[in-house]
Length: 414
Ligand SMILES: NC(=O)C1=CN([C@@H]2O[C@H](COP(=O)(O)OP(=O)(O)OC[C@H]3O[C@@H](n4cnc5c(N)ncnc54)[C@H](O)[C@@H]3O)[C@@H](O)[C@H]2O)[C@@H](O)CC1
Ligand SMILES: Nc1ncnc2c1ncn2[C@@H]1O[C@H](COP(=O)(O)OP(=O)(O)O)[C@@H](O)[C@H]1O
Ligand SMILES: [Mg+2]
Image (cartoon, rainbow, N blue to C red; front, side, top):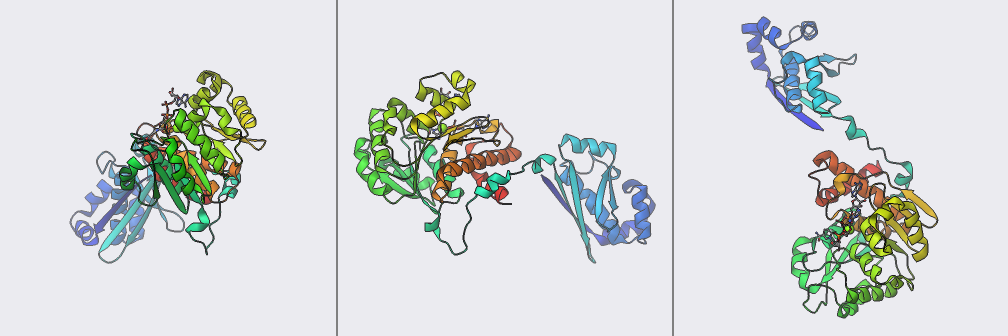
């Protein structure tokens, strides 16, 4: 979408009309515009408005007057007097190159000045049509509510050099509507996380000064997660036998829903029996590489049979499976959902960490785990699609997805 605005001093037009009206008309106005101006008794305010509109349009196109001529933009009026612009073939070509489909204008004037505003947009701005099924999933916010009503989400992750991952998951949970987000990180990272995170509550966990969670972290973690509604574990967590044992303890202790991502999945790959005694619902969000590692298959095998591998893991380990990638697949509770949103611009570090936070957030807000996961995956892809409209696929980074979560939710809400 592009915009342009212009203001014209009416007395300037009056002066031109006195001195060189015919030349001015010939240079700037088309025949139909001149007819309209005649019908308005050559009112300088009308002329100033048309002039301003042409300037505003040229700004919308990013060219200014020059690349597009005055007469390439013809300002006409519909039956109700609303102004619109008719482009010459040259004007149409410029618009096509800019992938704009519609240019709208609005003109106003008073004694001294005329102002015109132009807006240009492409059809792709309007391509987003949200599935009614998805719209129904969005949790309602009650007027008489407070932060305690919108879930306590615990994000467990981070290690030295991997502070971005829990940061992104945390912000994503907040941006998706969570009332309270607690970020549990190894104590050595406390200072850096305190600088990065403003709204989240940081819970530093004993790490023996190592910069990653150890088995000694468990008591602190248990204390902190006791009152949480949902946990997300894995972004930047790190993988080794000790963290695998720590994860087992957390999974057995916490009875609510847990979203397992990244190193959370990589830890389970070391010993899938960790999942055996899980009482609460588990949501796993592997990318194909992580699922391949988990199932001891190649990514090619996984990608060649995405639905079957998803169903297999979902049934065998009693988890809701989110197999990420083009058309992310969600399997669980006997259902399968193929997500339509998302684009290759999202193939950038940290995109998945954001998804983890969004899913945890919706489940924390009280949504059933499968539905919360479906809504989260859809909303994440839509945020990526909206980020693409602005940044394109190449320059898109995870932060852009994060910043588009509110707009994506607004779009779902519309
Ligand atoms: N700023 C940060 O702190 C970030 C930390 N991250 C963390 O880094 C750790 C490692 O995660 P990574 O996913 O980067 O691990 P890797 O980069 O080790 O990925 C594992 C393997 O999967 C392959 N793979 C990745 N995506 C694939 C796909 N869509 N299809 C097929 N193969 C694919 C990779 O090529 C690699 O061979 C995790 O804890 C993660 O949370 C990442 O999320 C990136 C950002
Ligand atoms: N080509 C693509 N089309 C649609 N979505 C994509 C594409 N590439 C990546 N994504 C999405 O981006 C996210 C990447 O997650 P992940 O690989 O875990 O990233 P990271 O670990 O760096 O955070 C997933 O949600 C995935 O579905
Ligand atoms: Mg990931």
